[in-house]
Length: 349
Image (cartoon, rainbow, N blue to C red; front, side, top):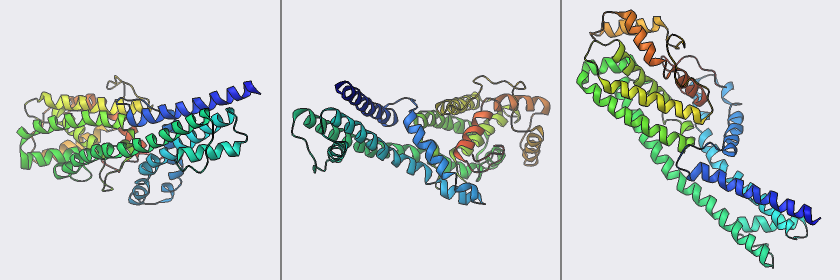
């Protein structure tokens, strides 16, 4: 019997420590560290939410429902962690001599929620009560402190997505962005855009792996998305380097590299398989040659200077696009991003 109580105490202690490390990996650790418990909560809730959007006919209705997914999943973490801590301590109380599981449950719940309606009268139990109350308060404080940081990062992300609408329409497209720069801003201003978005990609990579819930937080407008904005900017840079007959701008290449590295690291966080060093034509891209030609025709109709060799332009464009094509589409599918040109067909599953 003593051996069984020791084993029970060990299990309860391990459950509490594991829960604490789950909270630390999710809320405190400043580097990419996927957590299985947090991932399981998000996965279960996603499956529950997916029971509703599949019955909705329009994307806007699906988007309206899925807008609640990330907030609900995030707030669900706290009761899940508190419940695990409660049961972990309950087993430790019982192992240290509490006469029944019901009494152990009352002491544990009273201590965790600092209610004080059930207490013990010896040092080991009192020590556990104080530590449990401290852990309960810490978990609540962590969530409260986490939310402002996350929403600040969300606002910075969405400010850039909103500004892109001015330059690339909604949903944003590479062709529209290049047409508007040619008509309004001038090509000399493009380099500034590539630099701005290079910094944005660096911030996205950091925030969307250390604050992973941000990946699923949807934009205020249904037709906005950080992923469709990413695709439009990267395709604009790829078209500029491959097909637009203007002086070569190294900043565009740096922007593309920052973008696909950010997407790859976010995809890696969510265990999305991808080739880290893809090459064309060994790995195809989702944009077809006909779509590429149609884009060039539209650019040409708007007096944008194009390189004369379209075959070489296609090879160069595909060589840039292949770096981010697969991860962009996979993340768009994962997050149910809105339909947008050159992002391919997605199955919301």
